[in-house]
Amino acid sequence: QKAVQFHPLEPAYRIELSRAYLEKFIQESLEPSSLQNSEALKENIKLATGSALKATSLSPNRAAAWEALGAAYREIQSVSGASDFAVNAFEKAVSLEPLNPGLHTELGKIYARRNDLEKAREQFQKALALDPFFATAQIETALLLEKEGKAEEALILLGQVAIRSSDERVFVQLGRMYYNKKRYMEAISQFERALVYKETDSDARYALALSYEAIGDKERAIQELEKVLQLNPDNVEIKQKLNQLKSL
Image 1 (cartoon, one colour):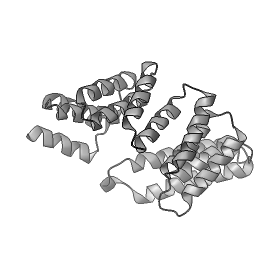
Image 2 (image 1 turned 90 degrees about the vertical axis):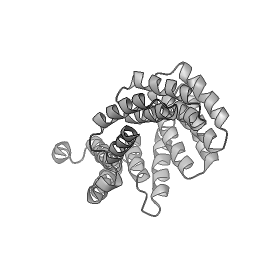
Image 3 (image 1 turned 45 degrees about the vertical axis):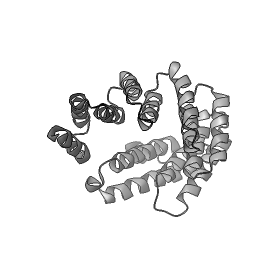
Image 4 (image 1 turned 60 degrees about the vertical axis):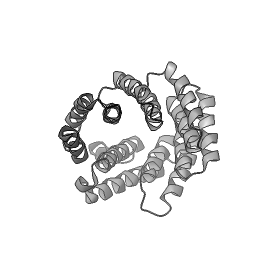
């Protein structure tokens, strides 16, 4: 905010400000619904969008400005046409930086959310043609296969990626797919691998707790949930799950 105040015509500061407001919005949205501040949500997404819009007007040929705008629009669920605005913004960013695999992947993710699976696949393929080891595009391709009912193909793909990956997201998604197939020991192995690379990953640790619960190891499940609660001390749902397990 200070940087924008002193240099109002510099788009880079407005791009970073938009990202900061968007991060505040996302963190608030991750809170349990009973704890969410609806006014803060509205204000942060409004400021994120406004900052990015100003950046695009100051520097219309800057891909990062359109990327920030697309990311903000992507998070707006309640406004009619927001998804179209997000697509348009990312398409503009891609046109300015066609060799950026991240932009193709983000555009593909929006298409996937809209169930336009062919366009999503096209963007993921473009990303991987530019960088065959781009982890996000690899993960999204696997999720697309899963969405199409090709769970085994998705598992095989992620398994191949996991051989050479140090990205914890690969192992989280692989663990989730094993968990959904009730292959709990394999799920546990993948969630534990994820935590090697990112010990503070609450999603991986919570999923690990559920996997231990599924095989009847209540004590390990409680231990993992207590670690999750340390990372998220105000999360009511985790407290309830922990109390439920302790009461059994």
